[in-house]
Image 1: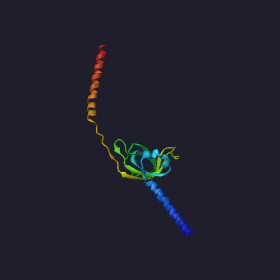
Image 2: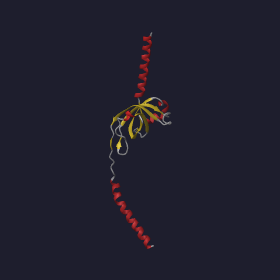
Image 3: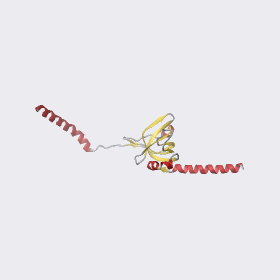
Image 4: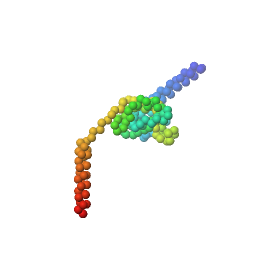
Length: 165
């Protein structure tokens, strides 16, 4: 009898885990996540995006902002060792690491003052970030050369007109 109960519990445990893992492997966009937040609130999701800004350390935990390709941003909270693999954060001079975040989505997190966030269980770096180069357009270079001269000539004309009045 005990063996039968153990077998049934084992099967139920396996079924629950397989359904739980299946929900976690579904990658979702931030737009879809926020539009259908009731469906995903409190559930494990997988989200992919660029790590941006700074990693904010808070004791044994950290915050990482993650931007999706459409430009939306969400805060990811988790143990600081999860973010140790992230080496490049996006900004003006760099594109950040592309990461995959697996964790529990909270539309209004009670632990963090009602903010929308993801409590990460796993963060994986899919692609390393890189330095960006921003070319200055030639007309901007010419303008920066000529504009001070034009301003100087106009100031001289103004002074001459004022003197003869």
